[in-house]
Length: 397
Image 1 (spheres, rainbow, N blue to C red):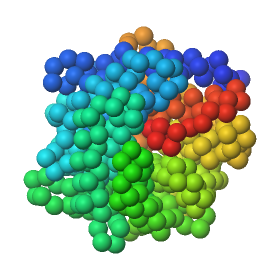
Image 2 (image 1 turned 135 degrees about the horizontal axis):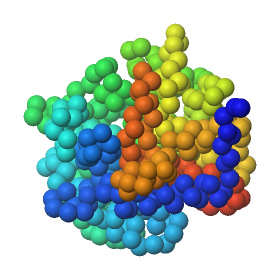
Image 3 (image 1 turned 30 degrees about the horizontal axis):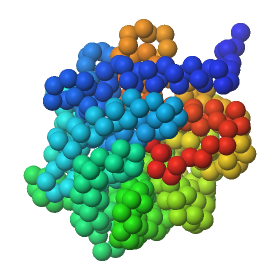
C-alpha cells in the first residue's frame, strides 16, 4: 500500500490553525514572568527541554501576528499580548542609537551567542512595522516614539550613498560590516522588508523622507532580480536561498500594494512564479538554488512564504494565478510538520522548522515558522471559502 494521501479541506485547516494559535498563547513561547515577561523565544529545544534565546526580530513578527489575529477575531487579548512584547522590546532591546539589539541568550551554549552585541538592519525593519501597526490600533505614545527612533536610525545610518542597506552593526566596534558567509550578512534584495516598515511609518507621520528611502531600497533590490524572477541571495556566487528570496518578494508586494506600484507588484509576482516553477514532483521548492546544484530539503518557513505569496499575488484570493495542485503539495508539507500528537503544551500545535541544508531534521517547535504557517493557512482558507477579504499591506508577518 502507498502512503495515505493527506486531505486538505477547510475543516482540517481550521483545526490546524486553532491548535497553532493555542500554542502561541499558552505554550510559554512568550515569556510571562520576571525581566523576560512579554518577550518571545525563538524556539523550544525538545532534547534540552529549554528555550534557545529571545529574538528581537521574532518579537517584531509576533506583534504583527497578534494584530493579524485581532483583525481576524476582534479579540482584544491579542493586542494585549502584542503590547507586552512591544514593552519588553522598548525596555530591554532598544539601543541608545535607535536600533534594536538582535538577541538575548537563554541557552548559554547556543551557537548564536555571537549575535548578542549586534544590530541587524533587517530585524529593525520588521520591528518598526510591528510598532507602527500596533500604534495605529492602540495610540500608545511609546510605540510611535520607539518607531521614530528606529526609523530614523535606519534612514540616517543604515543606508549608504549608493542606496545599499548596511546589514549588521557591531556595537562593541561601533561600525557596520558585511560578509559573504551568510545571506543575512550581505546587502541584498531581502531588505525590502525594511521598506515595508518605513512605508508604514510614513502612513502615520506623512513624512516624505520615509517613503523616499523605502523607494530607494526597493529600486536597489530590483537590481538583484534576474529576468526570470529569481532574486540573487549570494552576490559573490550568484545563488539563491528561498527564504530571503521570498522576503524580497514580500517587501515588494507590501510596498507595491500600498503605493499601487505595478513595477513592484510585478516583480513580486515574477519571483513567486519562478520559485514555483522550480518545485519538484514531491512538492518541495529548492531551499538553496545554484546553477550547478539544487537542494530540496524542506524548511517550512520558506514553504509557507511561497503559499502566502501565491495567494497575495492572485486576485482577491479567489482567482489563483498559480497551479492549485502545486499549492496543495506545499500545504501538505506544511501540515505534516505540525505536531498534533504530543500533548506537551510546549510542543502541541507548533510547527517544526524542517530540515537543514544537509537533510537533518530539526524537531524544534519554532515561533516564526508557526507565525508564517498560520498566516498561509488562513489565507488559503479564505480562498477555499471564497472570502474576498482585503489583506492589509502591513499585516504580512
